[in-house]
Length: 93
Image (cartoon, rainbow, N blue to C red; front, side, top):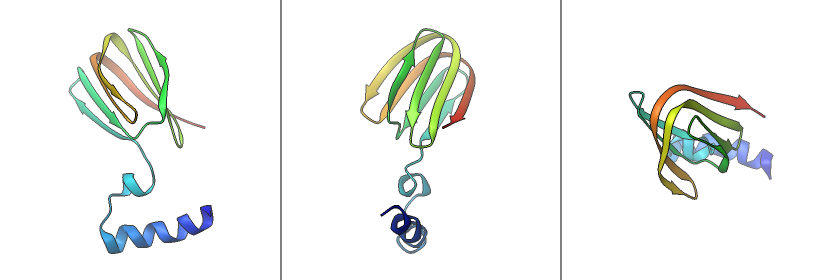
């Protein structure tokens, strides 16, 4: 089944104009300065404190470091974090 998805995915992206992040199930990260980060298409919260946030994704983890973190919104596949963000790092599996 996975090989079929790898073959049909690029065709669907080209012919149906579907976004790459949707087809490949990749996270979408939107940052506004150092104070606001919105992450879509994650698979769950692993670590949360006032200085660190770590989320599971299909390809690994997203780690956000900083200070004074506040979760403003958390939905099954979306999260909104505010605080002073000093680092956003992707950690592959």
